[in-house]
Amino acid sequence: MRGEHGLRDVLYKHISPCLSVITAGQWDENFTSLLAQPHMRTILKKLARYFDFILIDTTPVLPVPDAILVAQNVDGVLFSVLRNVSRLPTVYAAYERLATLNIPVLGAVVAGTPLESYGNQYDRPTMNSAQ
Image (tube, rainbow, N blue to C red; front, side):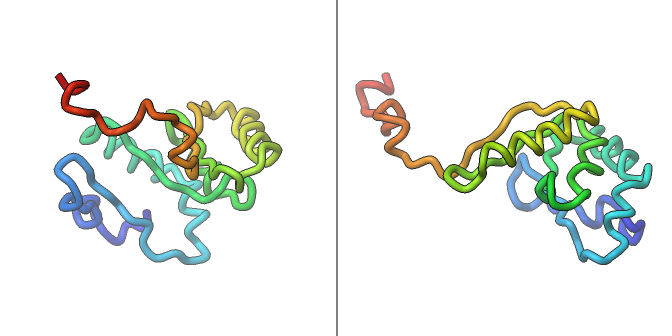
């Protein structure tokens, strides 16, 4: 974002054959203003030429502006919700903030659900069920 390194220098490909990662790097007080610059959109367009999907992990929507600035440059937002921690009024307020800016919310991933909630349909397959 600061132009200190090229994309090839910051792209980590050795994590998995089908996964590449760019870490956030070092934060400073100017970082949020960088997210508001047109350069953010340029970087994402360049990355879109090489990848089928680009997932960006940002700060929560409500407490800081970073997530909104990033969301204005993406195709959609997927909420990450922690079961028994995230509260519906807060999640809905974040949704409304994105909706007022016409940023599509694609859905949510809920983490922290105990295995027992799924019943036995996700048990390991037996030899007979694998045939």
